[in-house]
Length: 469
Image 1 (tube, rainbow, N blue to C red):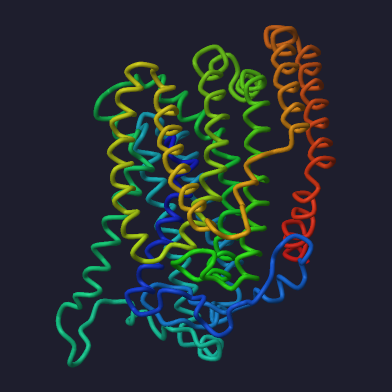
Image 2 (cartoon, rainbow, N blue to C red; image 1 turned 90 degrees about the vertical axis):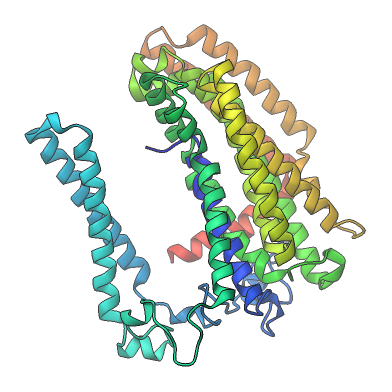
């Protein structure tokens, strides 16, 4: 089951992997991929889609511990094989779970544990079979794939080399520390919930369901945006220094893109927050019936809709920060993460005793707010003294804010009058009110945020269109 950190847990995990890769490159003398001679000179600002994308086709390294090599060295059918492997593993897991539940339901949780082990084993087996066929093959040699056989992945001592490589040992210790911090930030409230017994099992079940529903937007909308533009920022900017130390064209492009991204995720988060207040009860009623909608579920989902706004801002700001930080700054940020981890655990315990399961969401909100404040401070210092101010993206137009405020009032009135103890016709009327308000908000976006609309059309939509073709 996903914990409250599942919305940002995947995000935190990916961010830490990026940090570790940056440290490994720095340790091996390759701190900045932007130092390569093929670094793009200009690019991806609004209105310069085709030229920007053409300049961004730069080759960069893909794995810690290996020298940089062409990304085309990756197996050509790897994405398709990954889809097949994961799909097959999920099917095997579901069929196994269903059969055992029907045959031996008294085994209870043992069934789900065994199914998870079977899923993992099937996934590993599929990948092993694929790479056994690929390694050492002609396509692998032609593409310069850095691994020739599975034996190269096993620990071994090189001739004339010391038994312990202390540089790699320190790097491994760094991996461990950051993985530990990531685990606390991702699953910390789960440990508090389990070992301190602050919630009963019923509240934990409702909490997990609400968390899974609320985190879908973060997984399917914010995470792809963050992944794509982290790569963009890391290619365009040199690590360390500030905007004045960059090529001016690159710094201007990064500032424009960051401003548009901030405004985009801010608007998405505001829309979810506004409409989540009035439609949380109806959503849970449709999803799980009165069992979910009659208890603390709607209150949790309303709070979570506000938490989504913080997730959106944190994702974009941290993807820029981690793309621009030097190794020394990343090391200092580890101390910040340690302090945040400790404060998060303490806040989870204290706020849960005060507000119940809502306290976990409040603790995550406070933790996320501190991370956003740190990232905004870094971005402000980064562009200080330059002609660019990407933090202007955090100021939506007054017309849009007015439209969102009116939508919040109208939908709450609609919920009180039409939902949720009435019949289906009243439910549909409540949904219709929300649809009209949402349409009005989108019209306000089109009319008042023309630069953002241009950015979405020329950058985001064009990229997905090219992927489909």
